[in-house]
Length: 439
Ligand code: PMP
Image (tube, rainbow, N blue to C red; front, side):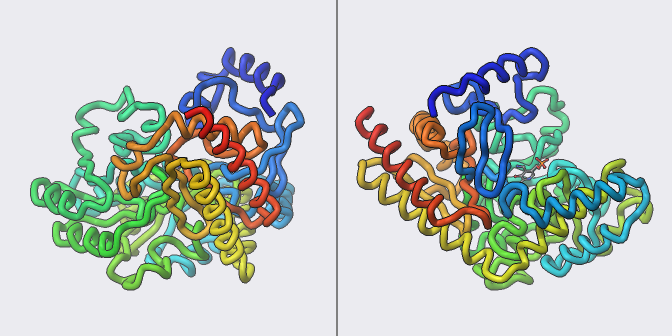
């Protein structure tokens, strides 16, 4: 698939009417050599079909939410029923209680939750609540972690901004940027030093407990324990951004991940959620300790609201998605396929003398063109973006859809098959072979 005339025509037209032709910068092909992004027409299970009639195996999974594949009948059915009963009431519904209880059962640190419409909103509000509770203003975050596009967390953010080579965004007042301190991921000494300097002003330490935005990166043993202890000793709250990590690796989140031994020692005060918990419809949620969540209006002085928040369609899709994920064996299956795929990619790369570092965490992984480990943002930046761009384009021409960024993960879904994995490995073998001859 090298010729996509309909996508190209639509892109030309989109450029006339939509800023940059896309409604999120990460969808543009700017970081992979430019050109028209593929316009998709239809998706089902693990596949996409574009407007030129080509089929693709999808590992983008819409940047995470589509863990049960596209148009899953259980979720689609729930959305249809919700739509037939009215999509938005502006009143509470019983459905909201159901999803809140499901989240609390899976993530015990959530005494109380609130639903919002995106991960950005969820994170933004955790910060407001932390500031209200501590009566402090500064936030510590980790380089390369992406927490949405609100002012405060778009300082030294990863994901979109780093891909585009914009370390920061225009339009953010320096007075706001000065409220944010950035420390390298996995660097407890750096965190300690920051807290020693600014500790009395720090409202919260915010982190992706398992990183999904500069590749998939595990915290080193002791990092989360140390982070929680240092933050609390300084009187700051701990906020986990689990927008990507919740329900990604198992039925729970990073803070309940089996690989972490001492779950009490790594428990956050507040957690931000999104993506998977909405089953592919817009959603975000945040929650945490009761006395902190009581800061929120109408109980307390911190304001947060939303016309669309908790809408029956998103909530129904979220419930249905979590129900699918409760099916015994689904995570083990994704895990097994991800092992198969990661090993196949590694072997194919080795065979052609191409350096690649694969960070796999259960059913998802990132593949970095480099010959060193990737444990923090600096190491992720120090990988070969041009090689990735070439690989991305070759895979696309083979009908394999990846995110157009060297920092993004590959996501397995419940709908990928062994045959899909085999085809993907064969495609990668041909891609690596071409890359090797081009060296
Ligand atoms: N936090 C994390 C960890 C994310 O990965 C993202 C989105 N990629 C966000 C927050 C923002 O979520 P949304 O795009 O729904 O606003």
